[in-house]
Image (cartoon, rainbow, N blue to C red; front, side, top):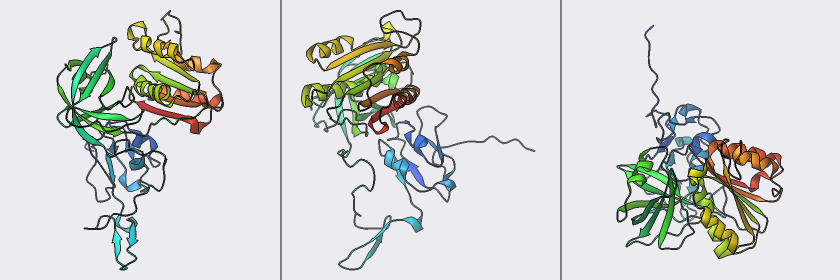
Length: 352
């Protein structure tokens, strides 16, 4: 029998094709593959590329992938017999999604969090005002507005930065909205297109950025809140802190756990010390994941070991996490075991 190699490609052209993925918008977060109820999507073996549609004939057409795509990169195509129809009452005309010149159907979301509202994303040009290596593998970039206004965004949102020809990478905003600049923290250790772009970035360079994207958004309440971030996952949490402490000022108790690998990887420590001195309701702790590190806060297990015994964790608290998928998954399990209500746990994860 002849031997054949199986080849997987994104968006295979098949008669029962159900989705299209725009590679210019896709940031390869693979949330669609994780949330798909039928496992018809899988992570691409090639890092940074769109997910692979492997079993389109088994799709239930629930469109949960499009609902949860943070950048709107997935376009869903219902089978013809399932396409939504509606009638114009004045004339009796029938319309169906996909037909030519059809009027827009009712746009209100049928599911999801209706408290979350984002403006349509726009692409603008910005100028690099700062590109500084602030730790062993982290670059801080500040991009300032040019002729176009910076669209309003919320802490937890992210932007897509053009880092090459038809290549975009997503980065969370590291500062609360001010209308003048955005702050980004980039992990250059992976060595991919985004890492190389920011590692070589110099001041004065014009950068193309589209924004805002994402559904990881802060909800102001009075109950305590725990923030958990690892390395550049601290970006949206820093923006969240600035929004709460400098604008909302609810007075809610805030605890931040910030994990890096070792002493050489520390950044923003002086800034968080200053915030803690200015706001009595905010405390923070640096945690080192390297079990061989002897600094205060170090120890095997990192954040997870600390969560298991932390005295400030309560059942009614909110938790916001941003870090690797492995960290988020394990921390969530520990928080649930300690009685934190699952609907009060919010997170954004990335590849690691």
